[in-house]
Length: 461
Picture 1 (cartoon, rainbow, N blue to C red):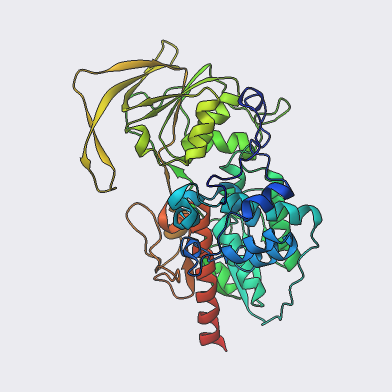
Picture 2 (picture 1 turned 90 degrees about the horizontal axis):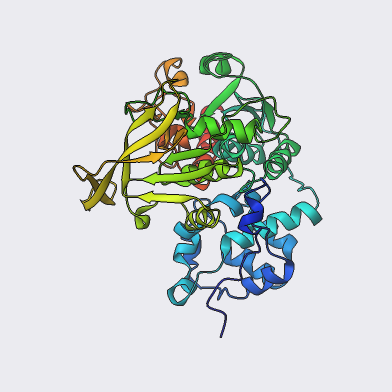
């Protein structure tokens, strides 16, 4: 009988990794990957594929791993995913492909994400640069944003023969992959290599260009682009609106992670400063909250995470929560901040919270937190980091006539195609949904590329 549990992933010890930003999980060896792949029973109906937003033929690539044919396994993954080394590390497989794995009925599901990561990493070390037989079609498409959605759309369109230019506002390509996800979860070198493979295909990446300022969407059309895909992400952080949020020592998780990850403020010789608190409170229960808290821990801080629901409602990946706890981060469940306390110099000195109880489910489908009167308590802190999600920047909508958006900022786009209210303009990823997962953004980019191809063929062929 096959092992009912996954082959364990080697990892740095907690007391070691809290002193560095190197990747926590070290990856499978070839023997480990083959052993794990043999747990797959190659289901006839492939339920795992239905849980993959980009439709990777999961049983097929795992079957090649069983045979030791890692190169062919990579080729299979690459047919549907432009960023396999990224997805293997940061996708919430437990809520997607692995959720539907039949092996999970009696034991643990097959470690699909770990196997995808292994194959991608193996190819980076041993594989040749992919050769694509691209037939130019003479049409230009602009992609706004170089995050996972934009890169996926760009790669798909390039394979179809389009001349693709990606416009990135920052000085480095990668979007949330380089500014939002810490190197101990996703090394920047991995992202750079994935991007380089797209550049090798002929995708052009233009940095330091803010669409809506440097160029407008109309400017792009006047430059000869036949369609535009907006994948500008969601970079405007949300705050709680409680007293004390303007004190020194309060900064959004978005800013904190950008300084540490993109600007590498954790390095002693960095030119970008970042506050180093002794006692850091992070508010939120998602992956961004875990990332901010774990970064603060590596910066030498004692760290607490405040979450208004219970442990079972945490939206973060289980392995991220597990790693945070291993690293000595304290959780205050069923607590909600009501005030950030300041000292006489205007700096954070504590966070006043009220305890919560859970009642019937709210619109999110999770138990609704309700304050318990008279249960206020103070948590010691000299730094307060809200990690409550983000909304899209309104700049593009404000500077593009006829482009409709939701009141909260998300561009209104058709599900699947990404078509917007403006002819020739498509949108997807966090710019449409608000902050979500990397793989969902990639799925949107893939769907939009197909729709853009159909649009251009219909209008210009």
